[in-house]
Image 1: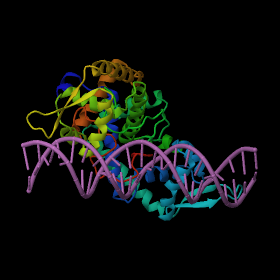
Image 2: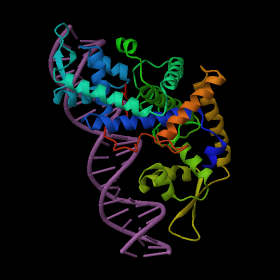
Image 3: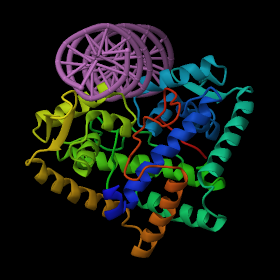
Image 4: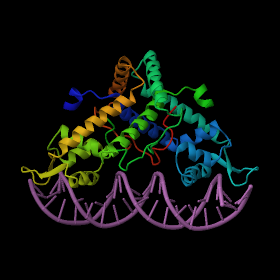
Length: 169
Length: 169
DNA sequence: TATTGTTATACTCTATAACTATA
DNA sequence: TATAGTTATAGAGTATAACAATA
């Protein structure tokens, strides 16, 4: 309380704090669909580029290929993602959403819109546009790929213990 | 690419994306001080209220008391935090920063300022004020405690698998 | 009996390495 | 020999539960 009064939070800290909160809230919503945020991210990445390989997913996510296996497995078992052996190069898979996934994607879209609306309900439309504009400027300046959420795996060295507590000033 | 062109990101997603990025960058900086972001958060919480107990830390962080033990242990061993048995109630500790910690706190302050400056370097002073104002409105609306970073532990149900990939729309 | 903090244990997440099959 | 993907294994992080000391 003393600190918050005398040292108003910096933008970087507020961003980290709100970002974590937004991710938590979103996770709570997707849980109601029986999906983790990771599931949702994967489904979207496959929807955006059907037929892509697990390898390409691993690169975009910045994770090791073995991790993609365990990430796709539950989606495959749930009947949302289909692994088709590539006819050209039978070593890799072509990942596709199943027809069943269409309904789930609709649910996800609704969930995401509700999340966005709830999260920005304290702002008027003009303020939302301002906020998005400012955040977009920073995102581009920081070299973030549009639509790729870094989770908490880190494009940085990634020391152990990250994730709990503070973030900056 | 298609998606980012046709569906500009919502504020909630940008927040989650930038927040994770900010946390990662900050972690990279604190690592150079030999500290994790968690360490920094703990040191600050103790500095803001010297003599507080591990129990109170557990409540503020939303973690279990046993976790606080393993969080404080390394700081104790590093000679930055001292556990003094409370004279009034000898069950609990009063946590204090050691004299050695003063220098570390200075390093942390410098690190945080450098982080903030780098992160907002794409904005002019007026835009920074705007951004902080907008973020503060949302933070208050969402009921976030000033200065308390939720890590990724979640004030929400917290489904497994959270942390990787997406966050919203 | 209730509370502060610790220890022991189990579970989850993730990376590394070894392996299979293709090329 | 090199590449896509899988499996096995090990390490870190965190919660649960049982425990000690104090109230």
